[in-house]
Picture 1 (cartoon, rainbow, N blue to C red):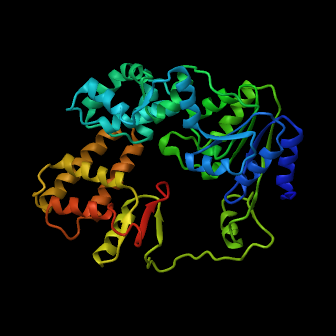
Picture 2: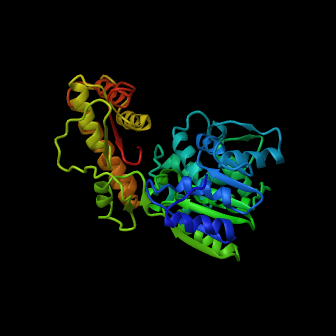
Picture 3: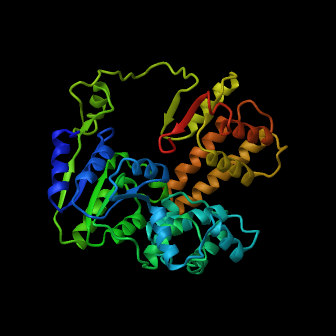
Length: 429
């Protein structure tokens, strides 16, 4: 059966079938970009095609829909294949970084989680591990909090040694599967055409791996910069434009850009709301009217999702529901861990009365903020202020630090996860 698409899709499919230029497709929410790229793969004239998917579940699903001459894969599977070809006995160990940190600093080093996060971001951003400026920019941008300046300096001093140990291929973690083939310049499988979906969420090391696997072939990139959500792990909201610039530098082939602007998902009212912020977004002619309501009473019920920019207002409202006996929780156990860590930095005495603890907490926060101001770490200041507000929101009906810790575990625990109200920041969602 012949597939007939929109005018925009037909233009894209025609060029996929009859041309060999690179293609960059700028799509929007619900614009059918995955369907467009799958149908295009059936028409593309390349003999050997590869489709890079964001995760294994997507790759498995795509594998059922793509033509037989197009291989669906993840970055990790492609990188692991390269590593196995070079060293067959390499083993996956997700705790590799922690073992390196323990081997260098011992069991008493308290900042292993922070250093692990920094190592991961250094790999994903392809930053210079020996550049204090680049490393500190990452620490500030991603609010990586070491347990004091001493442990931060210890980490900075040992980064070159840590990098050398990370390049050991006998043990590899998930970051290594993408990073090592790039930094060690290992051979990877090449394709006549490489299809890339969700390109707005790729970080620098992923972009470089894509370039290696295309290497003279044709690149077809699809994504939506407005939906970039993976900044927390090193993705750049300008990822697609960076792709475009890289292609211009490294390829002599023509590069053409295409829009996909018609949403198959959103009703008219939602599209009109979106048009307040960008105009290149349209609904179908037969789209439902739908509804967008503002200033409605806040009465969430089980199964609802409540979104906010920061955590503090969510924590307050969530705890209010729990106090009424209604199941609710805040998405993100790592947030709960960070709040408990903040409490324990102030005191290890769980029996300490709350009226004594809260002034100590305020003093700790004020001292940290003053230190961060001197270092111009604005992101960390905002994060610390949000955590402070979260702790205050959870301290309303308790007498001790232990009660505060129990409240944190309650709000960020599992109760209400299946049937209650879910609270989340936009990024976490």
